[in-house]
Length: 217
Image (cartoon, rainbow, N blue to C red):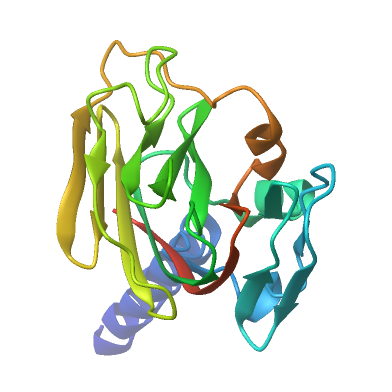
């Protein structure tokens, strides 16, 4: 009798293990280090006319001044197969403007089925905001802000993309806090569109980007 009970328990344990192995796949990925791991070789110049040189090495992107803009983007196929979320995720990175006085390290990223850009240091060097919302770029919509960006200094950026909300911090200061519910999201028409599905751009400046990490929220 005792051995029969043990045998029954053993079969139950094996059935339980079989169920777990066949019905429970690996846990979903929660973090993507986009300048490391398997993504380091998946970056390329955006293909903007008369853009400056783009180099990706040692975990950093460097954008040389273009005429006027330079961009770098993730390979679209790699991005698609990586399983990166389009909502409920955060972006963190650091950017430095080495020369020039306009936007640098501006990031273009997906929000559900659209894309927007967080402009950093635009329109003469100080403007911050989201382009575009309701067909208004960062200089026109409610996300517009201003900050001083010192050259040759790393600036830390964090963005949170939620179902109906966008937030962005620079050097731990909140600059963007806006509802996206019922709003039209999109990119400013022009070269920035070549930075999709995920990429960085600088305007007549030399800049560097490092420590690019995406995480699920």
